[in-house]
Image (cartoon, rainbow, N blue to C red; front, top):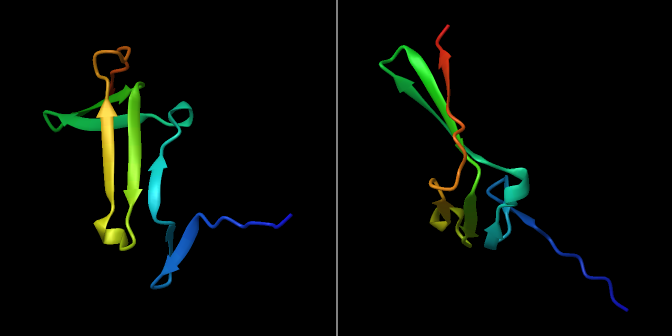
Amino acid sequence: MSDTITTTTRTIEGHLVPAAGTWAVDTSHSQVEFVARHLMVTKVRGRFTDSDVSLAIAQRPEDSTVAVTIQADRSPPAMTIATAT
């Protein structure tokens, strides 16, 4: 029986980056959120609870892409308004 070590990161120009390949975001431990300013006075915050996110990490990190699909019609209303302080 041989031991196999799988490396999920690599170093490029002194920076630790993910290994090349396609990565899926664990949606049970993440969410898509946003903040927008309304009339430059208040902040409107919201979140989408039903999303699918995948990352395609290329050999050259600058060639990497991200794909996000948000099911806005399935997300519960999660909007809150916070006044600026």
